[in-house]
Image (cartoon, rainbow, N blue to C red; front, top):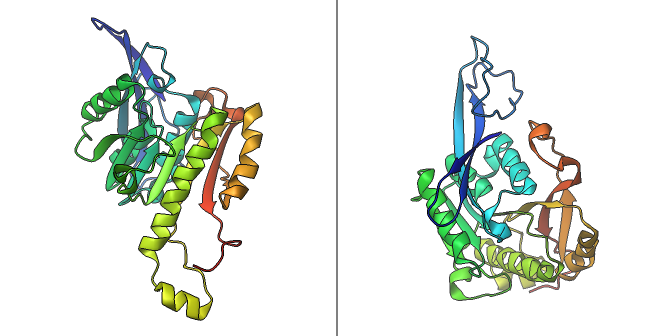
Length: 275
């Protein structure tokens, strides 16, 4: 849900969009999630329902970079996070290709320990806009904005150590697919090596693989002709992808809803040799 406001700027026209997520008091909730509303919605909640709201203000800049707009995939991913806050509470979240930062900022407002909002440094406007948006939402102490080039394993990238990876519409350009999976695969490997409870010697003796520490990559992408190329790449990087059954609280507020796919990508160890 959102309300758009055009904000004057001396150099670049800017639009601010407010995404409002209503939260019911648990004692009065029927267990059903209420659909997100526009801040201009005049309907009045029932007298016995205590409703509070989480507002996320997003700033779009009218430049050519597609990282400066809110895409339908980001709205759907934010909706999933809103309906499943237990997925992110108390965790270190890494958002790939954060763009305007809607899902990641919502994570920060719903109780994530830390959110690392990353994007390519090709456009300085994207990273600068992300920093401004974290301050607008009062989450700049919990959110960190950082350049991350997919497939570039420098020390800053390796030190991120996420407990959950998220991303909206990162599978857009075919030439980026393998670099994205290589990046995610690196975090899968680091998570296992850092979180395995047994030593390499013990694993060799028992003939057992280390147990994955539960790192997942939850992402939404739009079904396009090029996304069919994901399957062989997933197999190459020893990953599995499963569709997450999910119905947005308000499908009408998400453009192109039927073409969007919410998935969970995980490491698949079945074919891996013993370390």
